[in-house]
Image (tube, rainbow over all chains, first blue to last red):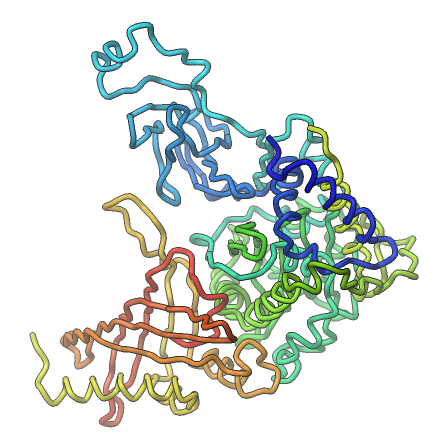
Length: 439
Length: 166
């Protein structure tokens, strides 16, 4: 059953087809948080795309699990007794009760707290387990064990980033990521990475696309929204992202790479051998010049190496992974992870964590100002003027620019970070998903 | 071991004054309440089945030093601190003081915090609630906060950012 009745869906699609013009650089404001658009997203976008669910280091052992969300669905991401990572709908096949009621843990099996229906860590139904005599009395004809297998999503990983999808016909994760893989290597593949602690979580009254498109293609906001960085002389050579590259890898993904022209890499020399063993010479050469790196995997997984800020004479930064979980048309739950190279020296781990917490996340001096913007945009987008007529917004930055022809990385790469090219592609891919009825 | 009445009153006055400084946005005065070596943290709460620990200190909502708290205050004094300018209306209620001397002249103080925060219109407000575990040290005859660990009572915070101090 569709989530939106067919007539309303057809009307919404007609309106989107007529008004959303990514190639022309025009996006109508209502798409940010319209309730009908949101229902179409739940129906056609989230179940059909690859959703990030965990970093492999969060589930290190057989039996380790975390509870996550795919769209609005609660799922268990678990490493089975056989070491294989699987993703299950967090719902018992008997009455739909949640099987895992805590945020993470280790189990040998799942037992539903309602009627005791029990599942192996690999998803097979094992019995009701309250005692075989009870089960035989209640179900004298026996239970169809295959029919009671947990509902399982497709699960694939890239550089220890674990994704899942409900769509059997979706391309492989490898193909879905496409060109963005080269850049994810720089962020998450350059060394063995681990999540530090647990993710921060909090709720922001914002449509989920606003932060996603911000990380995809918005280097320009930093000069205004985060002006304090220059005002307080926190980082050397603040250019707010002018120097660097804007990357439109295709597929709706997008990123920006800020570069410096110093002689030495900002990353710890102690890790250089590991980087060199895992990256191509071209990737390593770019990493040596990285000053910051932000991006988004379509539709809602953002990543960031924030600006390197000097602490005690050292330049430090802290890796962030960020999920914008939809929680209603104008509401989202933020998940924010901090990762670090497992083999990093202690000073990099300690200062990198402090830098991440102080600049990003719930109390982060950058994040605070962003949430203020997204909330106000959402409020304007859900008022009657934007809902009834078309309030068109400007997405034309860099629309005349031609991509570089000599950049070593894949995708359409533009000189300088000030471009919204990947943002236009983001809305094109988004629109194509929403207009596709099938499946 | 209980502290004497005079000490108890002094500590109570300190927390009342601290709440007033923050609610009145006298942040520079507030910074003076901390020792130079203060560690100011706020761990993350999680939902776990008992008896597992549900307070995670490996990472937090704050991981600050005197230097970084000072930086946060300097930022708030610029004209580009958008998230708190115009400022939230805040009111802090600090109660349930539990004061325990730890033997070397310092005091371990636990207090409950209820922080009311209102921004914008339509009567909206957030409540930020938790318990603070402080370590107090006497510096030149004045009690100073040498350690603060603010344990918030939500696994997913219901406020859009922590642009306010705990």
